[in-house]
Amino acid sequence: MSGGLATLDERRALLHGLQSEYPFRSQLLDLGGVVMHYLDEGPQDGEALLFVHGNPTWSFLWRHPIRALRGRYRCVAPDHVGCGLSDKPQQHEYRLARHIENLEQLVERLELERITLVVHDWGGPIGLGFAGRHPERVARLVILNTAAFPGPAPLRIRACRTPLFGPLAVRGLNAFAGLATVMALEDRRRMTPLVRRGYLAPYHDWSSRIATLRFVEDIPLSASHPSWNTLLEVEAGLARLKHKPTCLIWGERDWCFTPAFRQGFERRLPQARVHRAPSAGHLVVEDAREQVIKWIEAFLAEHPLAQEARR
Image (cartoon, rainbow, N blue to C red):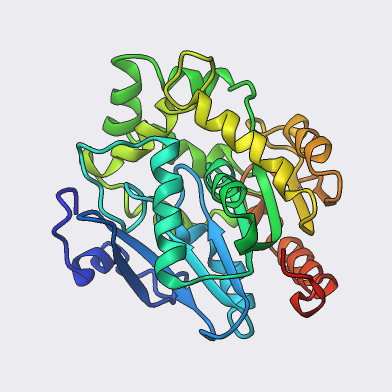
């Protein structure tokens, strides 16, 4: 898979024994020689929900909302290039701009319109970057523990960007993904051995962890960073989304995307309905999954597309 030659069966072999947690049919999309894996569940003529994950997760993150919503909605969930069951090329431009372009290609190829965008972690700048460029294709926004504007990074994240130590820890020891299954949620009972294996299965060796490190390195913390201007473009694009029905769902005990990031979105998207999960951490979809699903279902019901004017 690192070289982009793995068959679908070879990709799915990584998930042996995980069918109960990830009971979905895999789809593949060729992005000009690099293959993106994605899910496309539910009625093809249903309203499109586009779930965009972050780092070091993959479409596995969205398994509970997809199972709950696919009876009525078309649920599409890509794995970013380098993540999940997508190709993991060792020589690739793992930059925010490229991830946004990849998402654009997926939306175009699947002909998705009037999308409800659901984003978390790095899925925020990627998904909202797409939305800011194509507001006419986005009908509603659901935003969970993320950012789409500059902000501070905790010391434990910065440490993973350190030369020598960063690659050894992230790619050699799988410390970033491994520790995320412990440190990114509050209710450790939710991270059963099977669920933990699901999160980590695609990241099983040095080469398969390439994007885990590249995402960490791509966090733009200063104007000299290659992705800084792209992030500023994403932030500017939020102004084009102020008329979109928006739902903010926040794990208030997230040590990375703290409540200060939620407040940043509240200032930039003042129309947002805000739901706080006071006992949930970064993986709010795990910690408070029942609440998250209810909030999303209620939000979709409150803003039916039939009553939304096409913008």
